[in-house]
Amino acid sequence: MDHVTMPDPWAGAVQDIIAAGRRMDRFGWVPATAGNISRRLPDGRIAITRSGGHKGHLAEDGVIAVTLDGQAVRAGDRPSAETLLHCQLYAHSDAYSPEGRAEEIGAVLHGHSVAATVLSMLPGEAILLTGYEVLKVFAGQDTHDTTVRVPVFDNDQDIARLSRVVAPHLGAMPAGYVIRGHGVYVWGRTMDVALARLEGLEFLLACELERRKLAP
Ligand SMILES: [Zn+2]
Image 1 (cartoon, protein in one colour):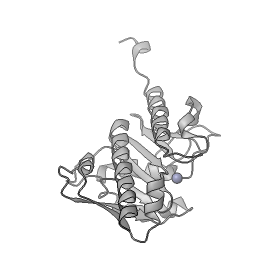
Image 2 (cartoon, rainbow, N blue to C red):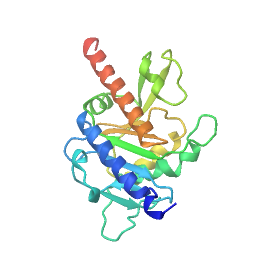
Image 3 (cartoon, rainbow, N blue to C red):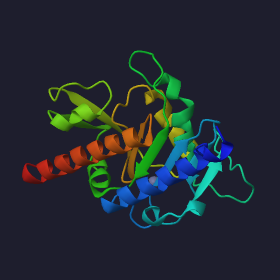
């Protein structure tokens, strides 16, 4: 095949990230400069949104390359502090599977929705989602008749310390996790899978918030 017709993995990852940012913005999940979005490339680099900037209005230069340990590939690029939480998921992707089989993580999404922010400010170490049809969007769930536990970790501006709190749970979070008063982390094998899970989780968190308003 002529090399000119070969798909460019970097350009594809950047377009996926720009499209994901627009989609998250449509739902109001990335207010101001909130959130970050990444995709892993076949060569091991991670394409991730740079620090700052609105994720609903990303341009190609809003995405930078980092290594698995979160270092910018190009001198002068400034990754967001939370890049480490993305890298942690990619690094542990082999451990993420109920059967011990590797589920590849190819994309990670982080947003700051109203529902995730408000629900996670309530006391407790997890948000329990029970009885909802949409629970089937998460890996390993084939019925509504179940409870999915979404861990809530206390917010911490020291991201390395926060990642050490998250680490023991990495194999057992089918719906992702929430940082208290802050937002969600969701991932998937592809960007489409990650977006579907994010949409499912945010729908369920919004349902929980409405339910609690009706019956506090
Ligand atoms: Zn954040």
